[in-house]
Length: 304
Ligand SMILES: Cc1cc2nc3c(=O)[nH]c(=O)nc-3n(C[C@H](O)[C@H](O)[C@H](O)COP(=O)(O)OP(=O)(O)OC[C@H]3O[C@@H](n4cnc5c(N)ncnc54)[C@H](O)[C@@H]3O)c2cc1C
Image (cartoon, rainbow, N blue to C red; front, side, top):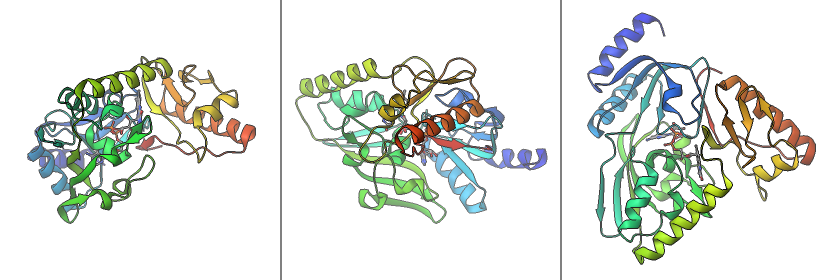
């Protein structure tokens, strides 16, 4: 975008969302702590601002990308040309009604899991250690310990180029770490989940056991995007990478974790280029060692 078109779009966006930043470094907004600037980053402060911003961009046919907690994203070193909308703080209201919860897309998934557990509602115990927004978790069909979001989603409210609509779980086409929301232009506003009541102590124990298991088997401290590759049919990407002897492999400050081989951690100042080179090296090693192809689970954002 030219400086002039950035300036005029900034002005129009500011009429919909008051926090609009020009040339904002995206590394600040993603868990991997890597990535160049977005021409424009809009951070709506409530659901009304998000609705207005997304509707405006769709109406004008201006392309944009949506960011939740940025925990499954590798942003290019050159950043993102055009508009990014970040959905988080302020878009996080939650209403518990009996065994249902209606929650806005920016609500933190671990916080929601803790709150449900405190109320003796089951179904979100698996999610307590996934650093996602509720919206990002639905789009990705995030999961762990044999469970995933698809089991508890009833319906979602989205903005699309055609306007607002409510989609049922069946419309969302959930499958392993994916949903149809990845394939169509839509901004997820709100989610309705069903969470069956269960003895609170039982739910809490299950959640804590899974959190402890996660802490023992996954790198918790250094910046990462969680699992980099999807598990291929009938196997685990981590196992294949470890068998290929790639644990500890590094390109610059991008390193295959010694704790969990499907994690790339940012040791200090890794770049997106280093992460991509490492990804290609790992793929090649796994191909040679086992003949399996690894596909990315993380999403690449921006100008690669
Ligand atoms: C330490 C760590 C552990 C992890 N463990 C797990 C795990 O156990 N299981 C698992 O499944 N994942 C795991 N992840 C990956 C990640 O947390 C999930 O993929 C999560 O669902 C991403 O949510 P997010 O809000 O960060 O989305 P983002 O990473 O910001 O975005 C992911 C995708 O969703 C889209 N998106 C986000 N919000 C919206 C919205 N409101 N409307 C439309 N599109 C949207 C984005 O455009 C992007 O395509 C882990 C990540 C880390 C860093």
